[in-house]
Image (cartoon, rainbow, N blue to C red):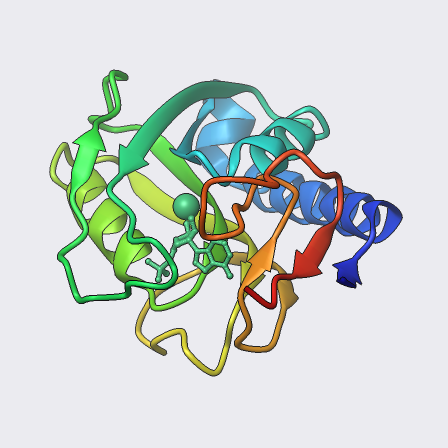
Length: 178
Ligand code: IMP
Ligand code: MG
C-alpha cells in the first residue's frame, strides 16, 4: 500500500489552511464590524474528518451544517447526474458560506452543490477542498482553498472510501490500487 499523505503531513497542511481561511475572513468588513459567522457546509461523507479538524482551528465564528450529494462508485463512473439527496437545513439567505469537500475530481459534485446553494441568495460562497486532481478538475470550477494537488489516482483514507465504502477511518491518505 502506497501512503500518499501521512497523518502529520495532513495535519500540518490543515493548520496552514486554517490560518489562510481565518486570515481571509478576518479581513472582511462584515466580520470586522458585525462579527457575522461563516456557515460551513460539509459535504458528507468524505469530508467529515477534514471539516472537523479544520473548523476546530479556525479563529472566526462558524455555524456547521451538512449536505449529502449522490455519488457514484469509483468503478462505475457512468455519467449519472449528481443530485442533492440531503439538503442544508440552515437559513442561507445573506449567509457567508464555506463549502468543505474532501476531493475535487471531475467537479460534478462541487458544481452541483455550488449551484444548489446559490438559490437562497447567500451573500457569498467559497469552497475549500483537502485534495484536488488538477489533471481532471475542470478549470471553471471555483475552489478558493486547496490542501494538496495530487495525481489522478483513486485515493482512500482520512474520510475517503476505497470505492466499496470502506477504509474511511484510517488517519492517512493512500493510493488505492483497487
Ligand atoms: P467529483 O464529483 O468527481 O469531483 O468527485 C467528488 C466526490 O467523489 C468527492 O466528494 C469524493 O466523495 C468522491 N471521490 C472522487 N475521487 C475520489 C478518490 O480518489 N477517492 C475517494 N473518493 C473520491
Ligand atoms: Mg464526497
